Image (cartoon, rainbow, N blue to C red; front, side, top):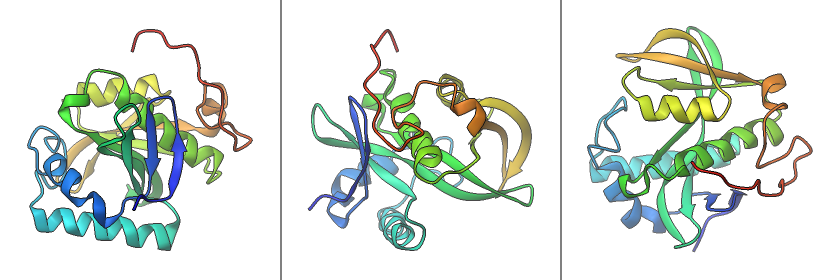
Length: 195
């Protein structure tokens, strides 16, 4: 059984996780490379089950959370992308977050998956602002954020980590190319250049 489709681009489908995703998700979230820049580090199998349980609960409670990122040419789960509720410096925020298996790094797929979540936040949730929390050494994620229109705002501490807050306001997003339009429709695919 596959989960409800949330958004789709040329190469990525975001859909709700299901328990059937556990075998494919396990090697991703237990991989030290994937989890290098995370609060927890690599997860245990029990923590991956907890991750899935939390996602399923949040879909019912909030209508969004982290979604399965499916690489469409292979119909393969390659990680996740989605939206997290955060409290940063005592202020509620919505964070765009993603993680992909290393075999899929360097192809622009992280940028595409994060853009889907970003567009969902603005086009479907109607939010005024989204953020990304990124450790300064995570240059790949900084590049993804910048390609998606986010700009550096400030430094802060998130749990025990020193992070940079990158933000994007609705007014800025409206001037960017979209996968999901402000009118809540799928935009035509842009002509692809190099990623």
